[in-house]
Length: 309
Image (tube, rainbow, N blue to C red; front, top):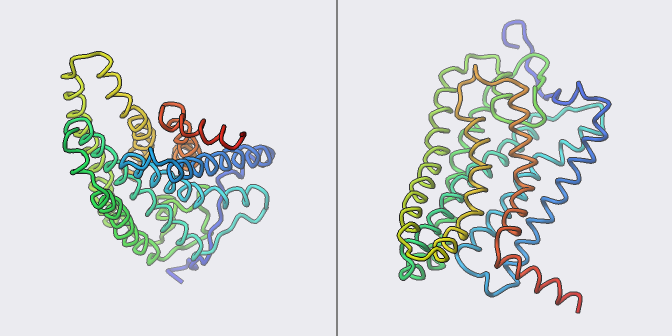
């Protein structure tokens, strides 16, 4: 007990309570998008592994990104699907913590991985003669390992702090999964100082990779503009266009969600942006990388016709 309030040991999601009649429709829509997301990203991974021509640094990072996206959406959507079918939309404290650990670690790892992918494009376009040396297998592995290590260390510490807080009252989460701010709002102690620390950490570990990406693309753009032929400029830009789209989709929602004070959050905007980065964006990434990437499309066509033969 804290004061006259009892500590809660489980949480209840109330995100879609007002849409009771539409929940079966939402289940079908979310299930279809989820299956497409997992299938699309799994297809990209299989194509890269099976195609020798795609065993390059760019596609090594793309394979990592596809794996991340599958895990990222899987950490949220299956639980949402279950809760759309049942009346009891509760989750234990331990399961909520596990979901937050997984989701936040994968989210920050993706921030860092997108920065590594931007660095890869920077080296490929600005230093093409040294690309093989600068982006060798060991360098790629180190960049991927650094991305994962940053995600695990930073977000494990933050999530562990959150679940040392006491939670009181009914434990109703105004969301459809255990995201950071909706859970912190249920704490029955003053968290203002800790929220400042969380905000600073978000600035450092979300904005810093974003600035690295922007800096890389400024230098890439300058290098592309120096290419004498229009065909050369188009070819150089085409190798970056898919990554630019993915970065834009990811960072618009991430910055809007996490780089703003607690008072600026509302359940409606939090749920809308969360649907974008947990359901919609992971589904768009396979489309972006297949429809806009000539090498991936050719690998898919070869694989398809080989199966048909």
